[in-house]
Amino acid sequence: REQPFVEAAKSIGMSETRIALRHVLPNTLAPMLVQATYICASAMITEAIMSFIGAGTPPTIPSWGNIMAEGRALWQVKPYIVFFPAAFLSVTVLAVNLLGDGLRDALDPRMAKSL
Image (cartoon, rainbow, N blue to C red; front, side, top):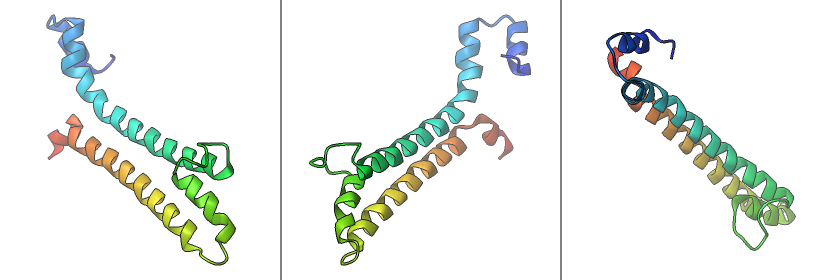
């Protein structure tokens, strides 16, 4: 609201709605997408932790946390039962974060001007 481009748009008589759609929304879209993907990745990790300790989804519903919790009893014999779900959870969280970072780079209007 205090940015020079918003004040310039007000000075030439643009309506508040047009300023919001034309100037403010493109500048807030990239940070909001990054925040959304960060929250999505955090939710996946939180769900897995809660399911692992038994406070999340019921054991009959397959999730990475439930799979790791079931494999905990066989950790000494078959550690891959816990390793693979943890590795796939890590790769998925990394992919979601990289997707958000890539979307920010693609949609940020300030990045387009510098290229």
